Amino acid sequence: MSDNNEIQKQQIVLTDYFANMIKQGHLAHAYLLTGPKGIGKRALALWVIQGIFCQNKIAGRPCLDCEECRRIASGNHPDVVHVAPDGLSIKVDQIRFLKSEFSKSGIEGKQKTFIIEDADKMTASAANSLLKFLEEPSGTVVAFLLTETVNRILPTIVSRCQVFELTQPSSTQLAAALKKIGVPADKAVILGNLANSLAESEKIAATEDFDKLVQNVCVWYLHILQGDARCFVEVQTSLLPLINNKDDEVILLNLIILLVKNSISVYYGEKDNIFVKFEADFTVLIAGLTAGRVMEAVELVLETRRKLAVNVSFQNVIEALTIDLSQCYHA
Ligand SMILES: [Zn+2]
Image (cartoon, rainbow, N blue to C red; front, side, top):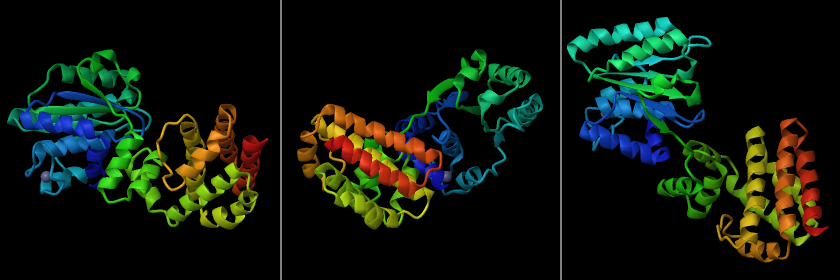
């Protein structure tokens, strides 16, 4: 259920749109939701379906708390049918089953909805069977087809659906959503730039020592920019002690990527102010560099990420990066 609550923050525009359509009774018969894995296609479809059945909806938005909403969230609603690949594909029998479920209720005039996950994995015969079903829409059916690759779906099916592409929220949208739930402004901006979703940013925010890590990595970066040799010691004394697992490693590396990328914005005078407490110092020091150096630093850090992917020791990688960045900025 938390997933569906979150979709309102993640897909602000689309949940507004669908709430409006529900309120006005203007939902279409079939929607095709596209977008990368994890973007919230399923959560959005469920949220809309909850909006259709909810007993206490407010302006087309589901309460997420009534019996209907709860049954839909837990996958136990008799009028919400899920179809997902059985093995590698969605087979014609699965679509036939779906149609038989709907023909029963169609006679009763009962509202029914279905979700087809990975709709691009329908076999040709499954797709043709579904097509016939979509061609004879009943006023009581709303369908959601979900896919990561819309171009693998029969054009005749696509043309019978309203297509919506789900995209990731921008860092600004994420920061705003985080501030709304009480995250301090400066931290919200950093988190909004580190994560691709609210769930991911909340997870990072909950990391033990996250605030300390941000503080320490900023000091480390400041010392690199200043040509202060303390940066070499700090890898061992103030960064690595805060790294307990792979997730922490990724967070630290992403923070470093953010620092060097932010340096480009600072160099060109775009005041994004991501690292508020350090921005004044960064600005002075970065102004003394050349554009080439600032760009090269980004390359170095991205190269470091590639090294880590092939399992080189994290400590070695960060120590090497400290040397490379120092040479890059001061050679
Ligand atoms: Zn409800």
